[in-house]
Image 1 (cartoon, rainbow, N blue to C red):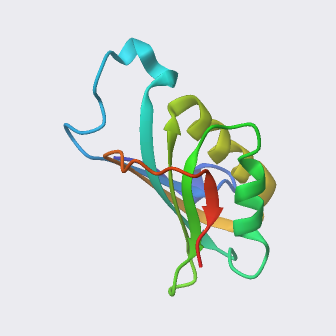
Image 2: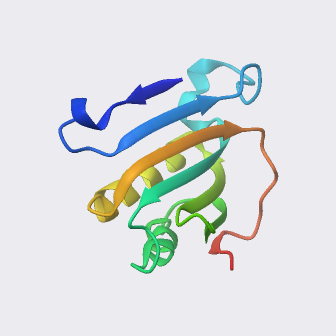
Length: 124
């Protein structure tokens, strides 16, 4: 697990990465960014009622990702998304750049692929 403390990143959101050991690492690590991955991403902060989910879907433009984004009862936003590592990184960076003023923390958990299809949508 990698954790960046907000105090040491000069105002950047706290990022916590979790990886399931032994899962999701099939194939060569050299394949890198074309390897298929699934991330559960939890955004904490002022992320509901500010267009966060709509922005997340908009940021997927031009990317080949599948899954959903939804509000959680605790005030956070959950994103369950899968696709190439390259596209996942691009989506997370786009959301960070567009919504950084609203994000206090991000938790990214890598999970086994779920076979999401049908694009990337808002789930109600």
